[in-house]
Structures are given as structure tokens and as C-alpha cells.
Length: 343
Image 1 (cartoon, helix red, strand yellow):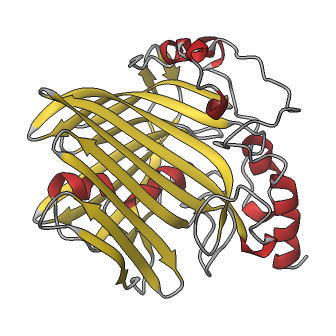
Image 2: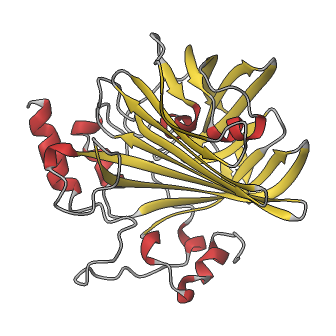
């Protein structure tokens, strides 16, 4: 079966399942009952075994093609301005279709089928107080589910972030292209200001966005790395790292390690078997280490992370649900189920 034919079949299938964050719900769509999240947060997904190729994988779509998103809430300790702050994070994973040309979500038949690409989107929300004011970050990663631009599956086609705090706001975005990366930013800082489509060369050797690692380390359709292996890559530090340090933008040498993790207990739930991921790099003479633990069984949810600056996160609740339709006041009780603030 040719690559083009497989892609057409995939698009025909996923067009019936991608409904996330639409402007409205189909009036003919049956409303799903909302269950108590606490009662099913420990569901065992061990029977869903990932396959090596996302294009031909029924297991990937069996889990991710159900028309819902995975919502994971975390208790977070976040370092900022030299102090540790208490807050929360929510990681939302969902499949969508975007335009290859614009990297914008497809919402109508105006976008030709050959311009559409299925993606897995991760929205990573981080919120915490800094003294009198609030700090909020939202980073969005859009990964091609199949090979795109001559790259491996789950290569990020777009990474964007917004930061809001009482001093002002920031927007940044990366587009991945065959001949390099394009960077856009709009910042309230005079030293940064506005830039549009600034070109950055791609390293000749293997490279990756740090923001994309929380998707890659989940091995959602086959192993990204074998357990026990380590490799050196060129890494583009995360948007959060760039915002907190204001270091110059560019790739740095990094080492990624995958090993068998120990059993851990988090929020009263015991995880007997985990996979321990670690990556390390040095920037501005500061050594940075990130440690992540994921479930050893599919879908390999992230259950814990620790950073060398003292930051950390622990999984509270995980659930699949059509979150984009749960925006009424009557749905506010679900925030309690996710153990996140109501406001």
C-alpha cells in the first residue's frame, strides 16, 4: 500500500473522530454521560499495545481515535525568581487535523484533503502564584502522527506558547519546515520585541524540541528509544526554560537516557512498574537535568517529573473525556474531580 493511499484512508477515518475544540457540537451527536472521574482514574490500559508504525497502527487509533481527549492533572512545585511555588498543571492530549500549509486546525471543507495532516496535540498548562500576582503558561505542541517532511512520526510541526503575568504577556511559535525552523514572537520586553518568521537552521544530526519530549517519551506507537539505551541529540530548550532564563535561543548538545524505573506511589496510587527517562544539557554554564517517570503499560502516562531547579510534578487524576463540550457552569464540579482550583 502506498504512502499516499494509506494517508487518504487515515484521513477518511479520523475525520469521523476528530471533534476536539470545535466551535459547536454536532446536534445529532449523542451526549456522553459524565462519570465520576475519581472512580475510573485507575483504569488499566495494559491491553493496548502500541505498534511500530503510526500510519498502519490500529492500536494507536483504538485508544486515540475515540473522539475524546486525555486530561491529566498534576500537583506542581515550580521554581521561579529563585523560590519554589505551589501550583498545578494540566496536560491535555487530543487528536486533530491541521493544514500542512498554515499549521492551523481544519474546521471546514475549504481545506483540500491533500493539505490536511492528522496530529496529536498536547496542551500543557502551568499555573502558580508569584507573590501578589499569578503566573500562567500554555504551551501547545502539534505532532504529525505519521512521517512528515521526511522526519520520524511524532515530529512537531508547530510549537507555540503564551505566557501571562502581571508584568505583561508573551507569545512565541516555531514552525518546522524541510529547510529549517521559522520562529515568531511578540513580547512586552524591549530587548525582545516583535519578530516574524526568523529562520533557524536545523542541525545535521538528530535534533528535537524539548517541548516535544513529553510526547516522545510516552512511546505511543512503538519505542522512541529502547530501554537501557542513551543517545546524544541537539535539543532546542523548552519555551518555559527560555522564558524563565532569557538565555539566547539555539540548539544545545543533550543526552537522553531511558531505563527501567522503580515502583512509586503518588497520590495514594501505587505504580509497581515505571519507565524512567532523563535528559541533560548545559546552557549558560548551568547544568540542567530533567527526570520523568511514565507508566510501563500503555498509554504510558506521565506520573511524575523532577527538575534540577527543584521543580516537580505528580499525577493527580487522568481521564478521557470530551472536555471541549464541558464549558457550562454545570460542569464546574469536574474541576473538583481533577483536584484543581475552581477559579
